[in-house]
Length: 113
Length: 314
Image 1 (spheres, chains in turn red, green):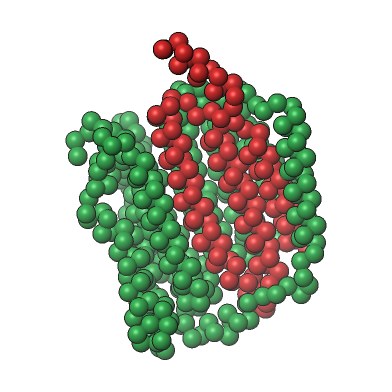
Image 2: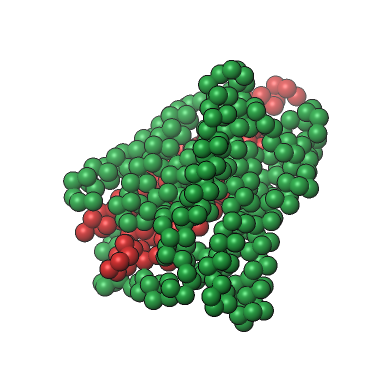
């Protein structure tokens, strides 16, 4: 039943990632939290693949192959998110999504005007 | 893996995930994420998914980690070093309730998985001989579910187009700049001279054994990409201008070969991406060899990001 323990671990990772996604105001931390949720989902898929093992194969190769695809696509999505974030930072000078940061920026703009 | 090491691994993974989410310093969180990716690699091995473990180590921990460290250092100076503010207490309590609820539902769902588990492994085992390759994962990626792999290669291209489209107007067509200020006699420059020949040989080896053993084009392409990135970061070579026709030809060459072989299958075997009897393995090897350089260039440029330096001469 080792794989079921890893399945519960994956469920925990999804919960931890969700908490980080909601609570952290910084977009880069949100990207990190989103990646944690992603790895949790991948781990659930790997547990399902492992349960489909037959003699001679350690797991069902179809979900495992899809996981390889998923990890590569997750990297592409993170790269796009980081590129958006860096561009936002270059244009705005700040990327925080919390109200305090937004009001501080409004104050700066007012002073400049 | 048996009981105690698995439980220790799970405790470490969950602890690191909490550390990443709760860390107030961005660099600390990113460093934690790299360690977390490497620990997950052990979990993949524990689940007998060695190919996935290699991909996770190379892309999930390695490339994603490098990407996030680069982002963290670029965003520094904008009050980004530390998370000073958090959401209010009410939001945090609600977030805890939501995440515990999601976890609980998932645990219940995992308990309800059908027994015995449905599996496609016997089908793969029965048809593996027809493809001529020995690694079932490679057979799935390039024969049974080749369409997914083709679409994935195209998704990577679209992601790169999206990243490039964030270029400021003034910098369009120029080179992404990822070089660091390095001493020309320093350690980074030295490593960037010594490591790439070894890395290239390992990448080609991983591509070649991927037909019969864990490995393949994604893992090999990631190693090639990291070698190229190392050379560019050390300032020994510059990134190509994104407007270059030659670069764009490299990027689309792999997917185009894939599509061409798919069309050949439509003509010779009656279905798109079907392989005629007897030549499946050579066609799979041709696709892998053609895809690897394109994937390597795409992954490296995704990490390099959009060009920003408007005053650099094209």
